[in-house]
Length: 161
Ligand code: FES
Ligand code: FES
Image (cartoon, rainbow, N blue to C red; front, side, top):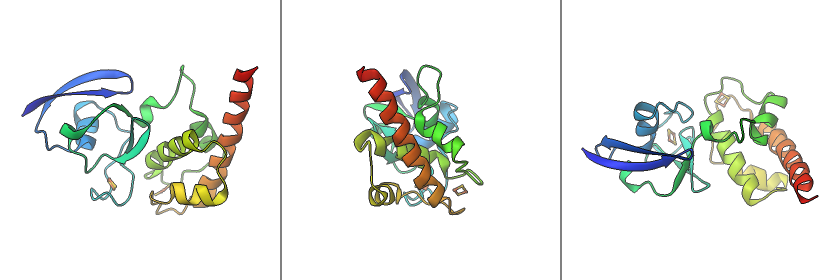
């Protein structure tokens, strides 16, 4: 066991765990954050995705001792008590079916839009491609990413005024 300090969703936590423990287990079991999910455990499906300094990573294979910077989980995405535009778009487009993959889809979409605010269809396909959905919600994901991009463009326009 070893004490490890993590910054998750803006708060600092110290946990006493085996340093080889996957970050996913620490988030779910020690910090009680149930947004990231266990799917394959092999970095294949993406349902365990969290953001590390804004970049999507697979928390099922990252040892907690190698975690750096700020971790954001689905629980940390809303700002000022309001849903992130990606979450809002997901609701408006009624994207989820079983919902199992949607943690990874939403966080990956948020990261994609922060790097590429107006992505083409091809950029969305490529950017979202590593996250598997057994319910085949891919077309609705594409629509929701576009809807979120439009909403975010409107918001930044308001801020510029
Ligand atoms: S559970 Fe991590 S990629 Fe599948
Ligand atoms: S919504 Fe069921 S796996 Fe994606």
